[in-house]
Length: 421
Ligand SMILES: NC(=O)c1ccc[n+]([C@@H]2O[C@H](COP(=O)([O-])OP(=O)(O)OC[C@H]3O[C@@H](n4cnc5c(N)ncnc54)[C@H](O)[C@@H]3O)[C@@H](O)[C@H]2O)c1
Image (cartoon, rainbow, N blue to C red; front, side, top):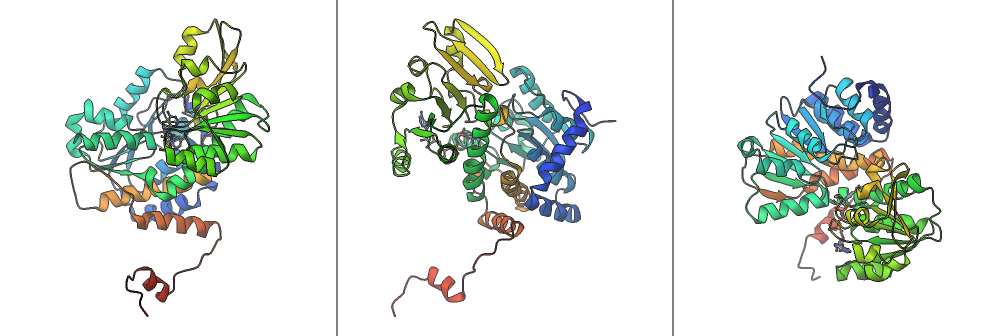
C-alpha cells in the first residue's frame, strides 16, 4: 500500500530511481552523513514538512532525512520544476509522501502544500517560503508544534526577514542560503551552469558572440555572467546596487540601465529576486528574436502577461519550453519556461555535485535545530560556522584535496591584539 501521495505516474518510478542513484554518485558528503544518520537515527519519529524543487538531488536529501528516522512529506516549490519520475520513485521506491506534479495550476500547487500540512510538522524545510507563509496564515493552530525550519533560497529569506521584522515569525528559521558553503557554490556555480544549460537545451543557439544581458549581479548573477563569458558571450550587466554594479564594472562587464541594455541584447537573463525587472518599455525596445529567461525564484521578473496581452500571435512551445510572441510591429520575442525559474523548468537544476554541499548543510542544520534547547519565538538564524566548515572539509576530503592547517603561533597571532615585540 503506497504512502499518501499525488504524483503524475507511479509507472515512472524505476526511471526515477535510476536517476536518483546517478545523482547519489556525485553526492559523497550527503552519503557520508546518511551513513551516520542510519546508525544514530537523530530524527526518530520527527515529522518534517518540506516544500522543495522535486529533483533527483532533493530526493537524496529526503532519503537522508528518512534514513535518520524522519517522516517526511514533500510538496513542490515551483509548478514547473517537478521531475515526475523522481516524484514517482520517492513514493514507490523510497516510501516518501510526495504531492507534486509537473505543470500544475496554482490551485493544485497550493493544494499540495495543504496535503503536506495534513500532518502537523515539527520541522519545516522551504524553498522560497510558500510553505511557511501557508503555516503563518492558514495553519496558525499548527505553529506551536513547529520547532524550527530551514530556508533554501534568497527570495525566501527576504520574506522571512520581513516576517521577523513585523514580529510575525513564530519559530526559528535558519537561512541555509546565506551560509558561505551554500551561497558561494550553489548560487554561483550551480545557477551559473544550469542557467546556461537551460538556454542551450531550449534554443541550441550559439552563445559565442551573442550579447547577453544579465539583470542582477548578486551571487547567482555573477555565476551566470562568468559561465556566459566562458562561452564567448558579450555580457552586459544591469543592477540597482551601486557596489554590485561597481563590482561588475571591475570584473570587466559593461554595465547599463535596462532601458539601454534592452536595445542591445540577443538574450536576457533576470536573476534579481525582484519584480518588474523587464517591463513593457523594455520589451518594446528589444530586437527581433531576443530570447528571455528568468533564473530568479518567482515568475515576477519578466512581464510575460504584458507580452501575452499585446502579442498579435502567441506560438506555444515552438520548441520544448520556448514560447514565441509576435508583436504588432512584427518582432518576435522568445520566452523560456513561461518566465519561471528556467534552470529548473527547462533544464535539470544544479548539478548533483553542487547540491551535495547545499543539502549537506541542510541535513546537518536540521540535526542542529533538533538538538538545540527548545526555544520558541521567531528569528532568522545563521547556519552555525562549524556546520559550514564541516561540510567544506568533507567535500574537500571527498575530492581528495588537502589543505594547510594553522600552526599554534598562527592561530594565536590571528586572535591577538597586542602585537608589540
Ligand atoms: N535558479 C536557481 O536555481 C536559484 C538558485 C539560488 C537562488 N535563486 C534565486 O535567484 C534570485 C537572486 O538570488 P541571489 O542569491 O543572486 O540574490 P542576491 O541578493 O545576491 O542578488 C540579487 C541582485 O539583484 C539586484 N537587483 C535587485 N533588483 C534589481 C533590478 N530591478 N534590476 C537589476 N538588479 C536588481 C540586487 O541589487 C542584487 O545585487 C533570488 O530570487 C533567489 O531566490 C535561484
